[in-house]
Length: 271
Image 1 (cartoon, rainbow, N blue to C red):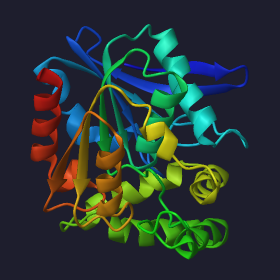
Image 2 (tube, rainbow, N blue to C red):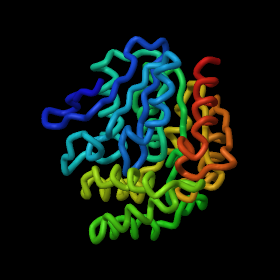
Image 3 (cartoon, helix red, strand yellow):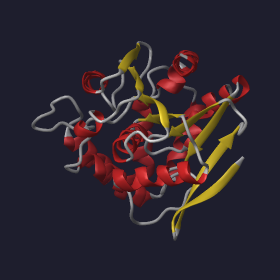
């Protein structure tokens, strides 16, 4: 079932809610510049196993409204909170991929881990996507600046280039086109504004230290977007966390090794 939830008086986000009677609820936060549809190969399987799967399209992306403002981590976490409140969710697993992982971390910090029983970070863009004077493990800032320039000058080309480094395993041309269309569904201004958030002074070091639920870190060792060193930093800071390297995956580990991804996710939830 798909529906819209109002997160501000003039902004609604799209929510895909599968198997509402499921015994365990998983809230999926997608990465940039996609939508909840990135998790198609989880939604195909997990509801049949008894899980309730809720995918939220972030504002500016997918089928959600596309305002010109509100793309910082605080506001994006507040949008998630509004969905949690409207659906009266409790004791759910929060799963975030890439920028969705950063939003999940900010949610945990901003709302004191409320309602969340377990956290799953997948190729998460944290504690900082880009290198900083105190954190040398991210991307060069120029790489993000180039993404922003490409968004404003030739967004289709930027998206195609990004798709070329997203997966580690070979994907068909048809799948590549599908992934490309997900990126085009986003608003150009939202695509650029979220990328600007990566460059800002806002990082997630202190947020990671406030997480107090069991946390599973899934990360492809060949990730060219969120380098594997980020996963190691997350493991070091989050107290009750465990990291599982995906040895045959890039940034899109939920598809590169989808069977392993689904297996590790469900095993973690059932523990």
